[in-house]
Amino acid sequence: PVARARAGDFDREVAARAGPATWQVTGAFGPLGDQLAGLTTEDLALIASWVESGTSCYTVAGATGLGFYGAEIPRELGVRSLIVIPLNAAAGRLGTLVMADSAEHSPSTEAVERLELFGAILASSLRTAEVMRQLESRADRDPLTGLRHGGSFRVDLARALSDRRFASRTAVLAIDVDNFKEVNDTRGHPMGDDVLRRLAMTLAGALRDADRVYRVGGDEFAALLRVRGGSDALATAQRIRSAVRQTGDLPTLSIGVAVQEPREDPLVLVQRADAALYAVKRGGRDGTQLHAS
Image 1 (spheres, rainbow, N blue to C red):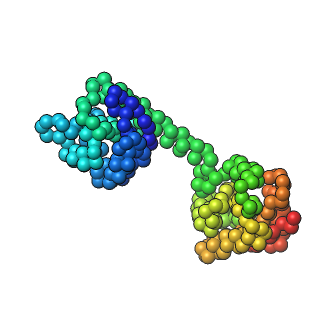
Image 2 (cartoon, helix red, strand yellow):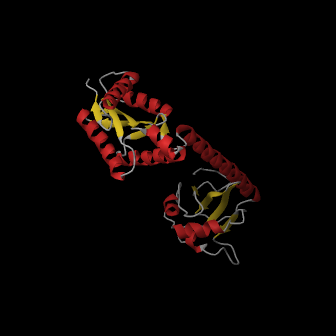
Image 3 (cartoon, rainbow, N blue to C red):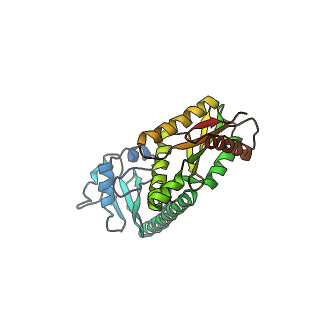
């Protein structure tokens, strides 16, 4: 969370942090920006403690009397005037807004009040943005497994096929859990849900960072891969099945593989992967097959 503000003579730098546990600079701008960015976690926590009560504060190098404990830290960096504004929301402390100047002057009451208002608006905006991010994430994911769902798969597939930045090709893996109905029938649906969650974790762990796995149906998964060709996609599919087999107690998988052809429609690519999957299941399940172009 970072913003820039202006209040009277204080238009030098703005720094803000996110997170009540470990403080860090998430943005620093202006003539003293590099110095503020170099503040340690301990220094930031000390400065943040000045406004722990929820009210703002300011300190000036030339002020008489006792200053804030630790005020010498920013002064050693060349800071002569400092305003600290807490960023608070209903959910708690979101961060701290720090404005510094290399000149000695006390801010006017009006300037501080404007900054306090700005801090309140900024905190509210940050909280709203976080809530929206959480809602978008939930809408994008299957609640049982945490994987992206079928809608996300279709969007990501269309985007991958239209992306011309990479020399690699897109492959689709159609993944089906063998005899999953028997798990639900003999061991109950809670156990079936646990199997799906563990499978999701195993599948995700067997893929490269650039690849993605989705839950597209009850016991159906899909993966999008960046590959050089069919052998590369088959190797990934085999790695997935090997990872599942190594758990010792998860059901086996049937996997159909299809690699994109030039200007191929996303639906056609998925249909080819499904056709390869059905061929595996007709052959007795627990296997992998690449659809011939």
